[in-house]
Image 1 (tube, rainbow, N blue to C red):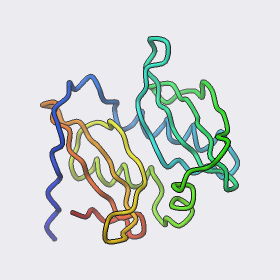
Image 2 (tube, helix red, strand yellow):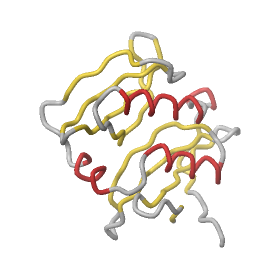
Image 3 (tube, rainbow, N blue to C red):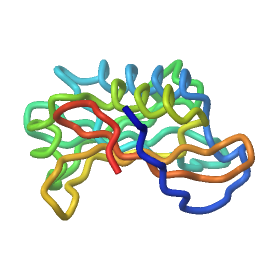
Length: 153
């Protein structure tokens, strides 16, 4: 089976990404902060000069934003959104969680996590869009099917 070619999206310094192991730990912390927590959107943010993960998590049909330390060791803050966005319904339909999708993309393409989110492609396929920073600073976007866990183009 041939792997899909990732889409190169830009170049960024390698320091702008976080180790996949730290990102997985951050996802686990965010998910564990809420009953049946399901992370669905992950971005690095600068909060008062400190880099953190800002992770959106679905729980009981609600949307929460959970800030986690960059190394994934602790939850720093969390708050519930007034109105959940449409991604809460998407994550409820997904068969593959964020951690599994991230590991699949990283195992195939290497690199460090920049950001990821669940989304629907034009053809209706529910996917995890994952941006990985490669050692040379190139950022590639990899899509993982949120129903099957397979890499797709």
